[in-house]
Image (cartoon, rainbow, N blue to C red; front, side):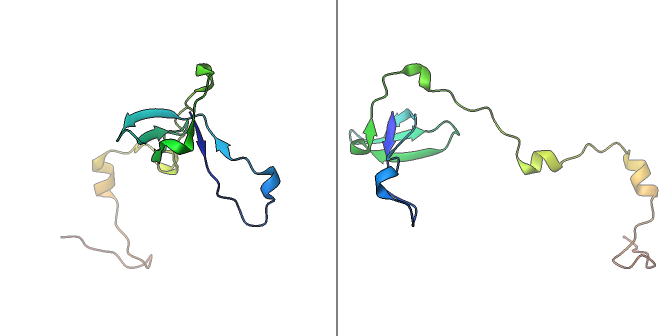
Amino acid sequence: MYLYSSAMKPGLSRKFNKHWSGPHKITRVVTHLNYEIVDQNNKKQTVHVNRLKSAYDSEAWKPKAERKTVEKLRKKPNLRSKEEEEDETKFGPHPLLEVRQP
């Protein structure tokens, strides 16, 4: 399915605007006039049937691979044991002040 969107970015010519985006896949029929669709980036949205157009090539639908998020990239494995972490002296915001934990 292709989705119609008449929205346009400011400053662009209406003549060269792409009105149909997609392909999308129908995941659920909400009512007989509203459908829930998902795009290739797994973004869901509910749209009215008058904004949908059939796609005749079923091989056009290829969901994109899951991208690594920033949180996944920032996580580093903890190679130290808990005993080593407890043995370290904890320092506060000032490096010369030691913070005592109860």
